[in-house]
Length: 311
Image (cartoon, rainbow, N blue to C red; front, side, top):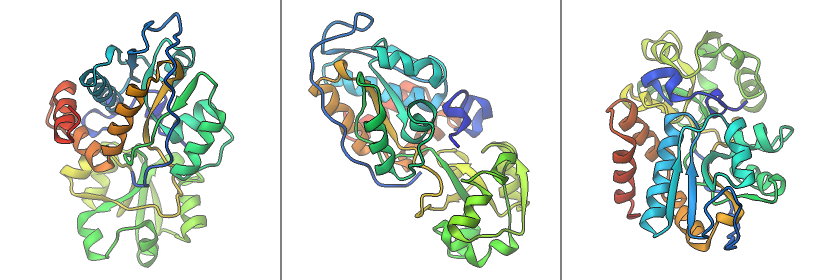
């Protein structure tokens, strides 16, 4: 089940709560065609970078725009477009050249709703096979904003927890929390039992990676919870997102979705360089800078690009 924020709201919906970790998938194809869509800039070295309507995606779009500008590409920005249902057709027809996407959500909401792919490699392969001929994905980054089973640092240390599988020794005595639908989802309580053999003491219905969930986790009302991997309180509340080696949660790697005719060699190489440096930990830190430290998109993007030698 893709995050609700991927189709609508996001960080803004949970105020400062905000808005995980497989290795990068295969490379996207380079396309250096100099053709253009009448709705897009006519030059092959000119692109429109868009974003969805939540802060993390706007930040990623700012990073893409700044990196491309530094590489000598003429960039026009169109941020905060709306949900995927609004912006995806704009990319397919060429009105938007580039937008930051999350591979798993893109696949199951807009490209192939029947797909059961979960790993980064499999999700990317499914996208490449099913995307319309006018669009393509570039390289996946290691950065993922996805559901995770999250615990406090204190419990992770006490019980030597790094993976969901490690919960086998404590699950029977623990309460797990999450949004109400987590109790019946294949990538929720059902999946934890089927994929990892875990049966928890009980389930506590909370909110979707929001303040109620975080308060329950930090207070000890629940010992584990469904929390998105780039929620800034992972840093401020000293939480740990457990790894998911069996891919119960589908991959949600950040990658560029592009209109093929706008994907010049320079555009492709620049954006692939960004993806090569982008990690979940880095994205988490940037989200904290936005929502907790109240830094601007431009400042956070510029600092990250400088720190990673991309400007």
